Length: 283
Length: 329
Image 1 (cartoon, helix red, strand yellow):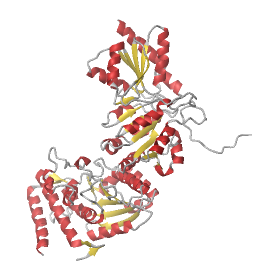
Image 2 (image 1 turned 30 degrees about the horizontal axis):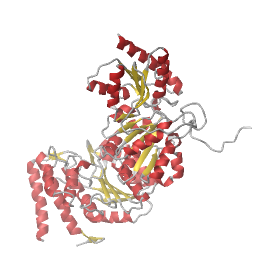
Image 3 (image 1 turned 45 degrees about the vertical axis):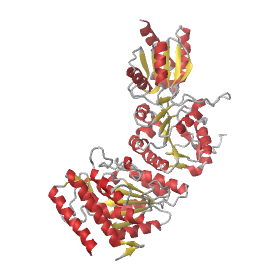
Image 4 (image 1 turned 30 degrees about the vertical axis):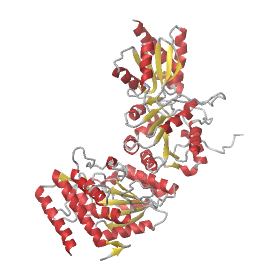
């Protein structure tokens, strides 16, 4: 088994598979939802929540915690699955996903609990909040780090660039911005709506240290966080290219923002992921 | 010989004088910050015109100029509030409310964070024109859950306004007007009570409820009315939310005629808020709202603008005589 800074990659891969299985199970009952984004981002969530970030599910308001902001607040199946598996709430609560009255709403919102670090359904706002936290942490001499998972389409919002400008100008090296670069937004592929490229050059010119990684390679992600932690005087931008539907062969590469998810497809996805997980257990 | 300029002060564009304007809110904020280490100050590149230059100079570690980016400033303030700080954010009323309304609702109000939003250049009182005038800000901010809305009537209440903003645990909108003349020696800071209006003058014929600089205009109108035998009660209503419902209903009963006055649109502001209280209680009475009459204005000196757009003491006087006439029919 390979390991990056002491992490067991095999065990992290299994966690990612378990999270993907939750995503399929959570989205299947309504027959539509953010299944492709959830499968695609599972490795980013796994690497952050189960390896990189300093968190204590028993003390979600611990002042020196690292904070993770999901600013693409609609990517909730994977987000809630991660929080539950990490111990912030009961895994059985995932069964209430998008039910009337459930706090597991389609757009995450802090009424679920303080581990939702900000309410970000209105796109483009989360990086500003993280920058405010990062500035306050510097002032208060706290060791916390601030991770923001942003959507690629979301970076079309002007406020993201206001916040990036401030982070760069202040050299906020406790801030790490990760774009889930799946190349799809509401109306289709990004380059058909409005291209962000050259994105890395843009972020570099805003004062960020930039890394480009395969967002479905946990070891590459962990190395990128490690480099970010050891880059003083600059915030880090990680362009994490992800594959929509990653981990389910019938869904991989299907580029849809909102996917209809028929029961038969869900069933085969469930079977494939279960086999991978149980096969892994048996090996 | 012309005097050599050694220091450039940012102009305030309130009047055509180049004399630096006095600072009263800014001093009150610094005093509060010296007592409470959680207070931090944010500015979107309008530090002297929002009286935060003293804070910048004396507490630089707790001051940030975040650049001309108000939407980001609100989010940054939300992050600081989530980190145990009490951010006071500053710009002109027009920019710190209208431009970043969504950010205010999601990053300050919904999480009920102690983000104190401080706007200057209230209503139409600026030379800078329609882009810098805020005639909708009270309407917007009043509609936001958890938000307190406060507009002090003069410098003697600025310290109390900061105190009230701190007393409210959640977000606050402070609508500030810089004094245009140096404060008098005799100026003694006055206190405010949470959710309470201040009766400045008593009379039995009509009640004028005003906020901000319109309180002074209302008092002038009351003096002119007295000369014609009409006695007016003047209420300074600095807290537009939460509103002093009790005082409004009591005044409706006592005088039976009411005029509201605000440096704001008559739609959605103080006048609307008072009308809602009356209607909800089933109270009908001769009533008139003095304010900007659903139109855009233009830049100019305060005196000129108040007269032109019907917000001066003369307009209040006319409104009062009209409601008193209707009452006596």
